Length: 393
Ligand code: PMP
Image (cartoon, rainbow, N blue to C red):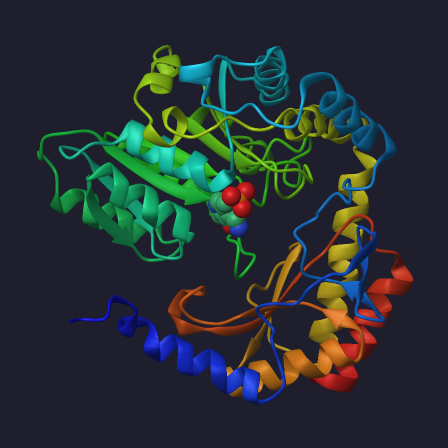
């Protein structure tokens, strides 16, 4: 018999080596959440610097009250997909409110951001089409491409000239072309040079999709994402986002002005064949979106905090994933063993960051990945820097 799990033995051994060092950087349990930036792990209080909780909205009283009300009035779950069971009015309200915020005509919400990518990519592209994706794309984008059955062409990270070359090679092939970018890349924290890619539309025929998972609420004067920051929203045909980061809840969305966009509801298996978001999740997303719209000062605070941490870590001589300030600050490590050891030193000193190692990183990089929150105090940011100085630099 071929044991199906045998293929994971290498991974199991790698994980065991880490456990043998007395470290489980991939399985920390927060026993109690004290705030968006603090947790109790056992009897130790930890500063959280790896949550993606960019706006620090998770403990906002209006958001918690909205979730509690929805739970009491609409129950604990929807128990089915929107196609089979119908929608709750609040699913539609969330879609309307997002479309209005994004100034787009159509919006479809999904149960998670991961499913938004699976659904949108497989709904937009089929076996006759080609998806051109940035080499550093998130796993959910790769998985969406696989589900679509489309031909895949990877281009060099953030390199529109490389995309241009690859598109020229497939000139005249049948089928549609979809180019996929991310607003802020989740691991290194850099952003796509949108203008370079939009300019290529003059030369090649394609539709453009931006996954704003880490940039929705974060980038642009209005927080609408990469297109908003670049002043090029009209050049983006489809936007994807998630509620699990700046919105502080769970769920995802796709949005567009395309007149046929609504038909995707009947073409996307990850939308049709899974239960819709629970009432509490939808209501918290609606309430959090309101906070995001009404309190732009949170975005300003996020950027001030990001600058403080970015500059502080670079002043220690640490190498970061990008040369420009970003709320995702990845400190580069030379190898996996050093990453595990340094991660543990940080954790023991009271700071949680993400231990990011292959296959979760581009180019097999090893990273101590920090994400900044508007809810971090300056004292917390300074403490994180001081602990990095002690434990890593
Ligand atoms: N896209 C990107 C770029 C991401 O980083 C993530 C999650 N880290 C997702 C999509 C999936 O979002 P979610 O966790 O909300 O399912």
